[in-house]
Image (cartoon, rainbow, N blue to C red; front, top):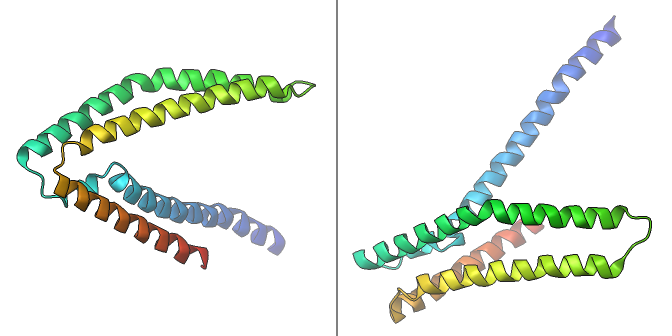
Length: 160
């Protein structure tokens, strides 16, 4: 009977322990991603640039337009990626590996990623062109500081 009780206690405790570990991991991940998302498009940095009311409104308008465009394309992009992943899965599961077919699908996927990246950078360029030359300089300095802090955090985590 004692073995049964011990087994029962372990069976009940194990999910609790694993659940709490994943909760802590999720919390850390949320904190990290939260910090990244705030600075990802420069939102945190823009608040340090002493923008005029007009600049703030122009940036807000651009962000809303970009967000609307992104949301409109999200479903279509997902469908395209899903089809490409299915193509790759079929190629991987085939009895013979067809490198040229895999390469063609991978290159198509890469080209789409390049196009998305170019579009994102074009949007960022539009937003940064709202700034004065002095604000651009300060923006560059703040981005450099942000990059250095991020690198220091990564290096600190590396040794833990």
